[in-house]
Length: 135
Image (tube, rainbow, N blue to C red; front, top):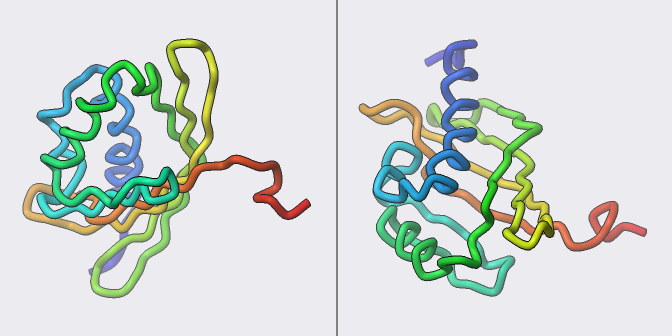
């Protein structure tokens, strides 16, 4: 199946919706973003990968007030992959309640489901040094 301009728009909106749902606390709607068996890899933060939508919602609830008050995504780049999948890379900025900001890269595998495009795997990589540490 051909990867169309409409697919690009839908996937871009899917990735953008993550921040809206998280920032508003609509964690019961994460199935609008992720497949039921999503792997959400936060190992770069010293945590085990989360498996499933319920685990993602539970982790956010457990983090409580330490969650960012604003999740912002930008620089979305999409590439068609084998098996009808799409690889997406985007940049994320997390604004914390105290005004500090963190930067990450999201590496997503996106698949078409009967409910539309969904993220089946997300790896979150923190940026801690300028130029990717290649100074």
